[in-house]
Image 1 (tube, rainbow, N blue to C red):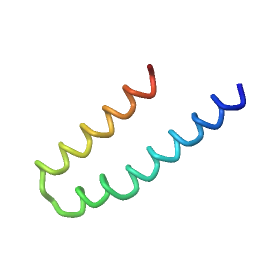
Image 2 (image 1 turned 90 degrees about the vertical axis):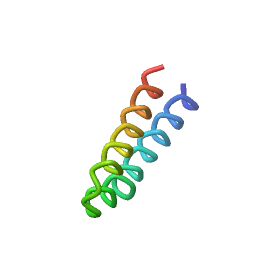
Image 3 (image 1 turned 90 degrees about the horizontal axis):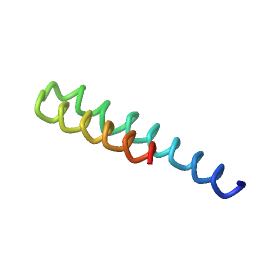
Length: 51
């Protein structure tokens, strides 16, 4: 149970970092293609967390 909890916290931190850096940077560029790619990556990460 402790290992699962630690992994869950690590996964959450990865999502936060991804959103804070990659997605934010894509938004700042104004490049809609890059924005869509980064949001798709984020959605994929959420999907992986569900499994």
